[in-house]
Length: 259
Image 1 (cartoon, rainbow, N blue to C red):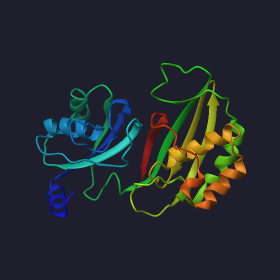
Image 2: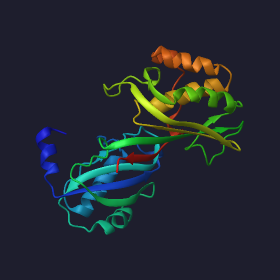
Image 3: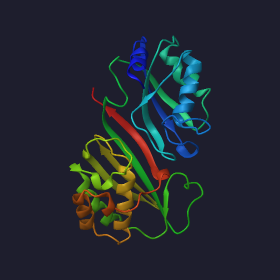
């Protein structure tokens, strides 16, 4: 967004914050695309324009990739529209397709930014670890037929906690920002055939979670040892890590903001 246009948008009298959930299966990621390619942002903006009666340009806490889902995506936008805040979610959900839902709408301070004000983000990654894939999980979990050793994966994940240079798990093509991030949660659990991994950090690099998961999968299968995972981290070289895990197992769960 050009500077003058951005200032014009911010001159509007209301800053609205939304918490949004979506199934990313049918969308080319979150970030607005040029039709006929459709992203979640295209659909949200078009719907909100009908409700507020002016042009809407969303800022989002994260730009999820094609196939990635969200339970707690946060967006904000400036508007002069007069619809009461308590009616926004219901009005929008009546127009949105069933795979996009607004959970909550609130008035935000003028300096609030869904992206820049975020202090922590939490992602979940799910693996369906069984010889035969469930048709009900095919869009929401990575199918791995070979048994995985969650104990070895948990040991490797211990190396993620703390402040580190995550260059080894950074894909090319992302924003030119520091690769140093602080991760305070990296956990793994298993319930039946489902392996769930949770990652919370002060920020994530492009494809960072999916590249970490791809490498952890190789630890779980025995191709790598837990100490190899630490060596890969320390190398700060994407070429040392494993291939990227598929997008559809990933979900943006929550975005936290300082009080």
